[in-house]
Image (tube, rainbow, N blue to C red; front, side, top):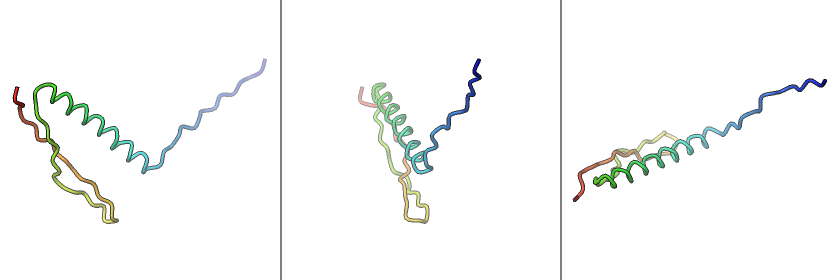
Length: 73
């Protein structure tokens, strides 16, 4: 009988930049779903930029907060 040796498969290890982009994309999808649900529940939602984050190397990102108010229903 032949003995089969199992070895763990190396998992893909995306670069730090790709992981950062994936995190932003996933959070954006969740935010969009929450906005859709809030509007369907009768609320108006506006995303307002509250600040801009700079890393000191020329990279920046907008930071937001939602403004939610009852709709006209």
